[in-house]
Image: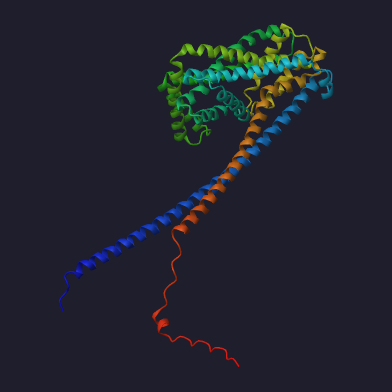
Length: 459
């Protein structure tokens, strides 16, 4: 039997078309399976991130409760020390409210707002010389972020990373976002150090005839100020002399590793060497035009002076005493000594430490004035409220708002995702209708059909 030469190409074509159909079917099944695996992985990642967010929120609540407990203990300690050191007991809260000089209290609120304005202007000015725009809303948010995270971390070191992250999130270049908080920290530390040194020199003349507590706290304040000045000096040195700065960082980390303080030696070295290089490039962009730093230095100097004037207005408002220049200089000295003498204590926002040092030094100096001695505890509490507790409470409120808003947005996103999935499934059903029923088999067609029922008989 001869083969038909025309039939062979037809068989090859049909075999090839079958292979292509099988390949297309396999590709479709593969894509479907791959899409299912991706969706499964996405669900696992979402579930993991949700659990991580829950654990983060849980840890935040625990830390917040512990911080509030520490603040409560600090206030208890504050009134205990002031009651112990003053000859008369502290005024009750109703008596304090009745004795407030409301004119000076309004002036106190004005001074607090002026201080917030100057603090925000520091960041706004740096953004102006870096980006060409003042960006005051961003500057105010950066200021509050820095105050909050400095207040909840030991030694006030937690604010700058969050400020850099926030600025970078607002489409500010990475170099500028890194340089703005860093330059502000350096210039502000130098301005505060110079201002404090001037009042530390005047302290023995302004606080004559007082106890040895003041002398001890003054020495501690000098040491603390010198330690605080070393940090910006080291940053500037590492930026101006990068090789020496890197060698110093490597040597310091090696020493801390031998002392078992730093566990992972080489990753820590790599991290800090990279940060030194990043800080160097960021600082060069700002300090290249060094004359623009002079206005920032003056803003920092005036802002810190206003900050340490707050306890003076608290005294004249709560104790209702006559405002004098001698009282202003004395309170400036007391507040700076108490601030620096407590800054070495590694508690969040120096909570407990600054209340203790302030109670000791204010009581020893102002207890001779009976109108002031009975409200010293309230004076320090109101001073701390406007310079510390206010930012902590604002940060807690903002975080609670962000948690609630994040949960609401996640719920809306889940709802939209479920609706999109349902719509996609509905479109697939409409695009691929169900197959028609199978035709009857040959056996069923050959089987004899049942006879129809007999018609009903009629009579």
